[in-house]
Image (cartoon, rainbow, N blue to C red; front, side, top):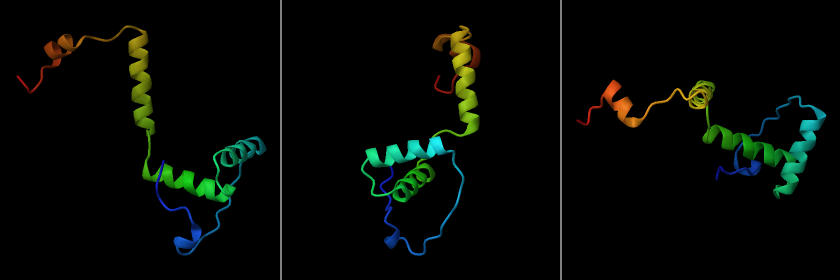
Length: 93
């Protein structure tokens, strides 16, 4: 998780941002922030957004490539390292 400061008083000017959520998703957010010991919903959302920006996980292209690889594995469309080396070679010869 991000170690970035989530205290609004230490970040300068604060801007209010409004967005829409379903009631059920908001309930999940509330259960989560309260269960993890955050002081408020806003603190939890700031922390989560900052963490997502500072430490992004996968982008769409990476997820598509992972799905394709998983499909290849399930369909046994893979090759051994020796077969890959033979077919594609490497620079460490």
